[in-house]
Structures are given as structure tokens and as C-alpha cells.
Length: 466
Image 1: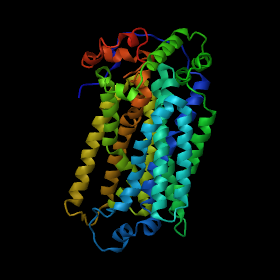
Image 2: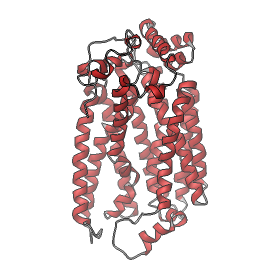
Image 3: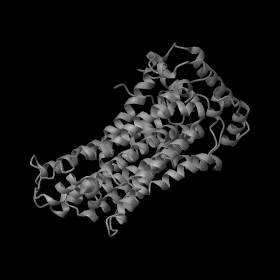
Image 4: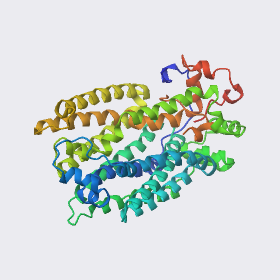
């Protein structure tokens, strides 16, 4: 595909005054905690599916394959339509809810989308913790997915609007850091809860999702609205006061005027979903679709979700497989911190390219290692300890590459590139104010042919506000 916009392709634009205030920092950290619910679910679900007591109660066919049958074939031991429904129902629900979430976010503000998402996740966590049958689990997973859809749509947008443009990348990556912390906490809890006698530790693992749900719910109640959202809802005077506090300076007239003008232009748009298909928004739409697509296509959810199961298959025992998942979770967190440091220094494009190459090479190495031992039969025989360690090392390198590139940037870039009139429906850039993002596309060597010369009344003086 044609390359995305880069900082070097943009003519010098406006530089709005503003500081990284304590108020903004604390606000963005609290908002970024919304990623905990997604991360906790990824980490906890893979762990409980490796617990025998959980499988025996809800997925007995899988339990028989992994524990009672004599077959040494490691392939397809977790092949169960019911287990697949348990896993995938969350993601399908999240997809559907994100469509509704965009309308709620636009009409009522970003913080109320986070609040509603936290409430749905809370109810789903309670259902899962007290589940007595599979349908309890699946219903709970659907509610968890609905909550994640709302939170994942609102939080990156909230962070992009609150952060000063010079620090927008670093503060937005805090959302991905929150996801990785959620994964790590879930892995640690799985390790200890699996040791509880009586086999009921999985209830604590699933029910523990109540904690991140309460964090995002309570946090959303104390968070301020973004100036962009207040302007959209007609609260002009309050929005200017809020912008002054957010930026930490009194001189916000130029930025505020651009925000108001962009909002007025957006009100002329009757259907932002239809407008997404217009030619002038084609580069935005292509990038906003392909970047998250390839973020998921890296296979990270398979690695993080099924890490304990994978490590069991390559020779680790129950405790060792859970501990290996803890190790990869720790690597995930550290590498995300690297991204916070580098995203506004090295740029989005450089990180995406380097991370993509690193991910690809590690995937080849892991596939070759597993293929050489397991072959087509799925019967590796006696696996040496060094072999399992080598696979874990390659997986850790893979996770680190994802965590400082496609992981955080898959959330950051789509939240930056859209103009206000289609932004909530649609949900490069280093050092560029979001109000100047239109310049990125208009000066790009390929995408300029789609956006130049169209609707100059919207772009002149107000460049697309993200």
C-alpha cells in the first residue's frame, strides 16, 4: 500500500502554546487506565483455559483431550466449538458496540462512553465470577466485549484531544501501557490462583475483572470533558476556560478559534458515516482500517491470550507455563515504556517499520522451531529444556517488538488522523498539532491527489481537527 504521512512531508504549521501541566498528566493517566479492562481480559482468559478445574467444569471434552486421552499429538487438543464461542464472543460484541459507541461519544462526550463501558464490563465480570454454566460465561463475555468496545473507542480519542501536540504520542501510548499492565497483573494472579486448593481459583481470576471495571467507572466520573467535546455540544464559554486550564496558558485564542471553526464545519455534515466514503477521506479511511487490521494480524492476541497453553505444549508444566506467561507480560510492559519515550522523538513511521521487521523475523523463528520439532504429526517426543527456553526467548523478542510499535501506534495513529466532522465515526504525525493534520495529507506524495482542492472552506485556516 502507499505509505502513510510522515512528519518530514509536512510544511511548518501552527504551533499552539501550551505546557504539559500536572492537571493534564494526571487526567491522561486516569483516562488511560481504561486500557486495564482490555488487558486484564486478555491475560486472564488464556490463564483460566489452562486450569484443569475450569476445563473440567465447563469444557469437559477439552479436559479429556488434554488430561485423560493417551494421544501424544499436541495439535487441536483445544478444538472445541463451545470454547471458541467463549473466546470469540467478546471480540464480536466489542466490534458491534464500537459502532454504537461512536454515536454516544459524539453526542454525550468521551467520558460518558468510558463510564458506560466500565459499567457493562463490571456486570460481565460479576456474571463470569459466579458462573454455574457455559451460557453464564458466554453472556458475561458478551457484556465484557460491549464494555471494551465503548472504552477502546473513547479513551484514545480522549487522550489525543487532551494532550498538548508535543506530548500527544507519549500520553496516548499510556493507554497501551495500561493494557500491558492489565495483562501482567492477570498473568500474576493466574499463577497464584491456580495453586488454590479446591480448584476454585478461576472464579477469583474471572471475578477479579471487577477491579479494573470500577477503576474506569469511577475514573470517568471525575474526569473533565475535553474542550473539543464541549464545543461539539455547544458549551463554548466553558470550553474556552477548560482549554486554558488544559494548556496551562492564557493565550489559547488561536487554537480555540480553530476548534470552534472546525466544530461549525462539522455541524454542516449530516451523516459522518456516509462522508467516510467520500474521495477526500479515502486516505484517512484506508489508514484507519489497515493500521488496526495489521495490528491484529501480527498475531499478538494469539500469543498473549494462549501463552500458558502454548508454553504447556512445548514442554512446560502447569506452573512453569503460567510463569512463562508472567515473563512475557513483564517484557510487554517494559517495551511499552520504551515506546512512551521514543514515539515523539523517533516518530510513528520509524517505530512501525522497525517493529514490523522484528515481529516478522521472530515469527519465522518460532514457526521454524515448532515446525522442526512437531512436524505434521504433532508428536514431538521428548522435548529438551533448552528448546522450550529458546522458543520463549523468541516470543519475548516478538512481544517487545510489538509493544513499542504496532501495539501502541495501532491505537494512537487512527485517533490522530481524522477531521472533527467524521472523527467519532471513524474511530503521522510526530510534533504536529491535530488541528494541522490536514496538511499531512495535502502535502503527501500519493494521498494529496485525493484531498487537494476539495472542500477548501473546511480546510482553509482550520486544518482538519482530530
